[in-house]
Image (cartoon, rainbow, N blue to C red; front, side, top):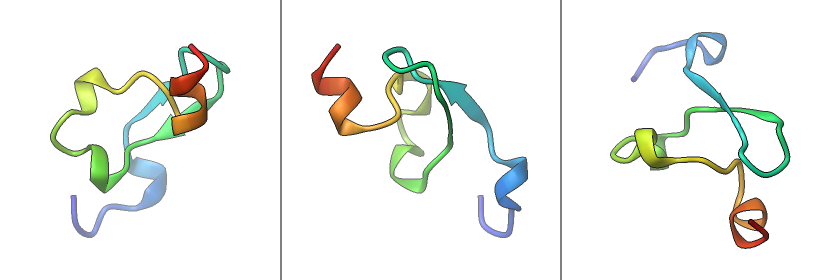
Length: 45
């Protein structure tokens, strides 16, 4: 996803806080399984 504008990246809604979050390079391999926007939300399911 090199050279893509931030506004063109895919987004999801966090399952915990309900806030939208965008794709990050560290999630590239498992983007379909990502459900939480941060480690804090993931821990406090």
